[in-house]
Image 1 (tube, rainbow, N blue to C red):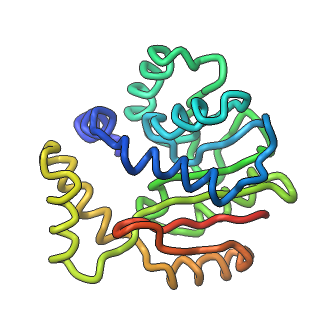
Image 2: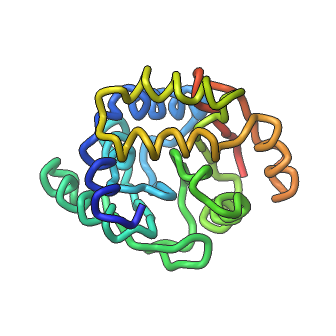
Length: 211
């Protein structure tokens, strides 16, 4: 989402329900997170998940990594407005070979990045690169619906009042996403077969575990 109109629509959209659910599931799946640490948010976009994580885990810092300068411009403004600039940094970084502030993180998480990637191994390579040994990982992404008709139904159910550019992107994102079995195959091919995968809603799946 490098175009300004796409980035603006995404930054201004109301993702409170799925994004809050993402943080709730992260806490549920990884109950033994330490009291403090440094987290990396891969494909952070305008940083809404980064900010929500920082509020839910007030002794943690977050580095949000994303390749879209347009998205990050909106994100930097929101970080300043939210008063979280001492704990949340958003960095332009192209995965999997870009530069991050840290070599390894105490937690690596990602939301809604996988379906945007032309090659899914980019995410799993990045997860391995920035996770410390024995570190926790959490990924949430869209789940591909069984038909185009179901995809259209989901778009109207969850983004019927959003701008057309966002509805169009949501529809295409649903069709570009993966099934649970496909993600399991990706993890096996990437040397991460021990990570757990399950459907978490009518339109999402989650991946979690220890590297």
